[in-house]
Amino acid sequence: MGRRGGTLPGGATALGLGLVLLTGCGTTPAPTAAPTAAGPTSPSASAAATSDATLCAAIVAHWAREVLDSGTYGDYQSMGLSNGQYEILRDVVDAARAVRHRQGAPAAHRLTDRRARAACTERYRDGVPTGGPWQ
Image 1 (spheres, helix red, strand yellow):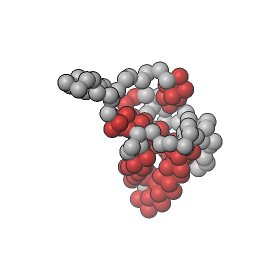
Image 2 (cartoon, helix red, strand yellow):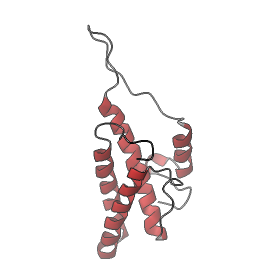
Image 3 (cartoon, rainbow, N blue to C red):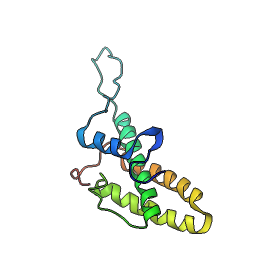
Image 4 (cartoon, rainbow, N blue to C red):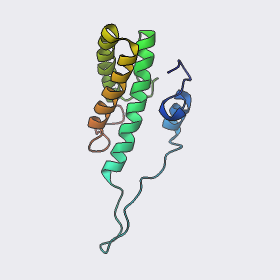
C-alpha cells in the first residue's frame, strides 16, 4: 500500500476514490428484483448496505495503513470519513499498532482489513446510519 495516491483494493487510487465520493460519479444503481404479480419491488436494503459497507471498509483500511505508516492522524473530513467511520478507523489503528509491535506489519495489515470489514459491516447492517451525514 503506497503513500498518497497509492492504490486501494481493486486498483482504485485514493484520489480517484475521493473524487467518486465527492461527486457521486461511478456509482451504479442497486439491482432490483424482478416484478411480481404485486408489482415491481424496490432495491433491497441489504444490497445498499453491502455496497456502503464495502466502501467504508476500503476507505478505513486505506487510512489505517496511512496512519500506521505516518504515526499521525489527519482530520476525518479531509480523509473523506464520517465521524462514525473515523471512530472505526481509530479502533482499527489501535488494535493494529499492538499487533504490529508483537507480530510485524503483515499481521497488522491483515488485522486492519478484518477489523475494518467487520466494523463497517456492522455499521451498515441496516442501511445508512441515521443522525446526519457527519455520523
